[in-house]
Image (cartoon, rainbow, N blue to C red):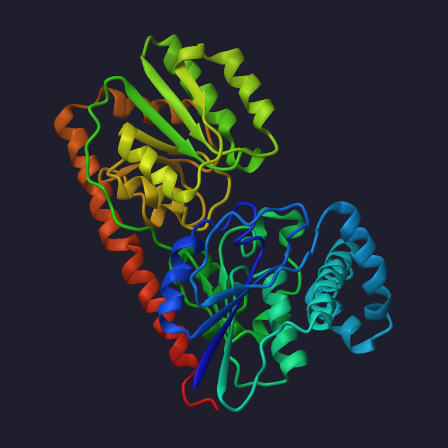
Length: 423
């Protein structure tokens, strides 16, 4: 039986983001005969930036998601939904109230999914589903891609023997950080996916409690990172690193303000940030205002493998993450794989891998600048023996919790098993 995996992504392998699929897809390729990758947010100007295995095909279809594109697609598809009584009923049930924000968000969500679905169906490029093929649907996000997956399974293929699974990360499952603690079409998607795999126990437990009817469909499956590199920083000078997109959610302003306090206290350090984003110029201006020019550097976005190489070449002393929301942050796992202790905000599933007195320190979700500065100061002041303890703990945590070979092999094999004997 030919095993065909349809992998639904936002951008991968175009543009940037979803870096962790760069490694995972290789393990998937070992278990499946062919993979069809369908990126759902690609504009014609975006370039292919990642390689895929030889057994994978990327559907080169534009699905631009700029504001103008979204508006046009909404006007094209929303009227058809509004004339469909059963779909309107579903939108209402998933809204759970007469709150107009929730109704409109659900309608927008359904309309955006429909626009992608119709273009995809009309392309004629979807894999065939015949007696010699077992199809699998894998959505990387519990958002538009998962909703699209339900339409492919139940409407296009009309085949309930096709396993449909979805990962859940941060923004796509943590509704409590959204207005009215709301994300669209949760119950509808949970009723139609076979399994939702959040990347953290925190998210899994939250969703199981909120949606008890579907609790047995929710199971934690962590992301992972590749081979570790044990080398202990000499902390001379103290090299502090962070790695993320530069946007409000990541709260890089907290790092800057904390380092400004340490500067005033006379500490010597260098902070390097890896990544870019919509708030880059704003954050650079803040750093220029509060720190000396030799105390910080922005090196922009690096491909995943180059980040790991940078850690190897520069041997950072401390990794800092001050995000307001996380699943289980892979950036933290990557730091630990290189024996770098961590200071991180206690949000999402971060506390599942950052253990005080072992591999790092947690700061409160309120992101106090004083607490952040104090945590960084602890790592500057601690003895070499204490620091070695944290570095060893970080590396061991990667081996125990985040080794991609163990995690991704198990995940790919479990997905294959779902489709065995279905035909």
